Image (cartoon, rainbow, N blue to C red; front, top):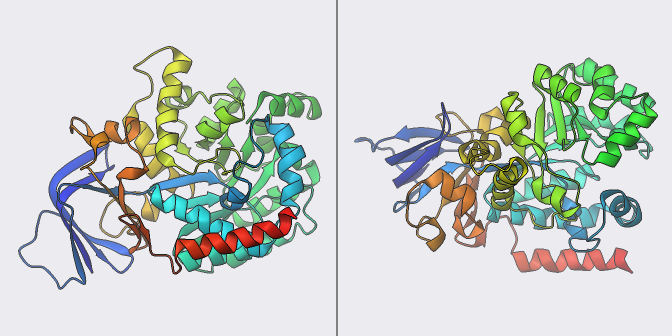
Length: 424
C-alpha cells in the first residue's frame, strides 16, 4: 500500500472541491481510503509526504493519435485537407509496427509528464500499439478507424472482441475515421456492429467547414452528424471529435442522444479549422471532454495548454471575459475524458476507483499565491507542476523521472533508428 498525507485533495463529486489536511491510500490498483488521518493505520510500502501539494484525478486525453509523434513538426503550416492528403497519408502508408511501438512510447512519456494517464486513441497497428501501452503501464481506449482504405473491415470486429477482454489497461470502442473517408457501405457495416454489440460510436465530426459542405453536397443536404444519426450509429451513444461546425439540428441530436463533444483547441487553431462553441454546448447540456489530437497537428501532447485554450478561446469567441467557467474546463479534462472513454472507474477520487492520480507541485512560482487552485491549474498551470503521475496504482513518473521499463535515452535512440528507415 502507498499512503499520501499532509496535502490537499481535489475532487469533483458534486462540483470541484479542495480539501485540506486529508490523506489518500492506494492498495494495488485502487483507492482504498480518502479522509482525515486515521488513528489505526495498516503497514505501508511507501509513505509520501505531499508537503502541501495537491493530489487529484489525472487528466484523460479524450482524442489523440499517439504514434503521430513520428510526424511531429514534419508537415506544419498547412490546412487540414492538404495536410492530410499531401503529407500525412503518404507517410502513414510507410508506417510499420516497430516504428509505431517506439513512437507510442514517446507519446506516453509526454502524456505522463503532462499528468495524462489515459488516451482515447485512433490509429493503426493496434497489436503493436497495445504492446507499447502494456509495457509502459499506461491506460488506453482504442477507437477503430474504419475507412474506405481498409483492406479487411472484418478486423474491426475481431479487435473489438479481442481487446475488450485482453488486459485491465486496454479497451476498445467502435468508430470510423470520418464521414468523408468512409462510404455508405462501410458506414452500414459499422452500424450493424454497433447494433450487434449495443455499443457507443465515435468519429471525427465537423472539424472544418469544408468537411461539412462536402458532406452536404454528397448526402442531399445532410451533415456528418445527420448521416450518422440516419444510419443508427448513435443509437447507443458515443460522440464526435472536434465538432467545430455543428448545425442547430446537429446540436439537437447531440443533446437528445447525450453524445460527447471532444474538443481539440490547439489542433483546430494550428490547422486554422476554427473554434468550437463550447459555451453553447454547455448551455445545451451536451457532455464535453478535451483531447490533444496527434502530435503532427498540435504539436504538443499537453493538457495544460488545451485547458487554457479551451477556456480563453470561448471568451474571445463571445467577446465576454466571464465566459467559460474554468471549473468546468478542469472537469472536462479529468472527469469528462474518463466518461467519454467509458472509464467511469477512474474518473474521480473515491474509494474503489482506480488509482489514476497526479500530484501537483504547489511550490512553483506559477502556483503562488494560492488564491484559487482550480483556476490556477487552468490559467497558470504547466507541465512543470506535475510532481508525480500514477496509473493503475503504479507510479510511472515522479520528479522528472520515468518508470516505464526502459530509460528515455534508449527509447529515443530506438525510435530514431526506426524513423530513419522510412525516411530513406
